[in-house]
Image (cartoon, rainbow, N blue to C red; front, side, top):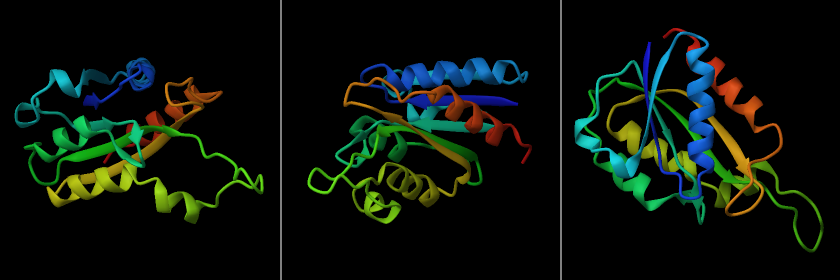
Length: 160
């Protein structure tokens, strides 16, 4: 299995997640090539069994460079993809102290849905998704974030 992993890390958190994923997949005998979207041409991606896309969230959407990259993709219809995003951890309401529900978070956090929409319009097939939370805008990553990456790696290791 060959995986091409594209991230749009701004502060290094996404790159850290990508390297952990690469390390975990190598123990499974899977070749993973990691690229920053600024160093790749979306119309000239190498052939792979799976494409992983990772973006931080900015104002509830994928960062602009990732949206532009995804819109320029030229992959065959039916190509398999997975999403592993880095997003701000949900914060409690300042007045009530209550954590937002899944429904409330879905209203303002649309990183994965926006990426899915772009990719599915191109006829690509999603096989997995995951999120690693950031504790601040520039990080650090949440405690035990490696376990989330490991769970994601297990999802994409399942044969199609």
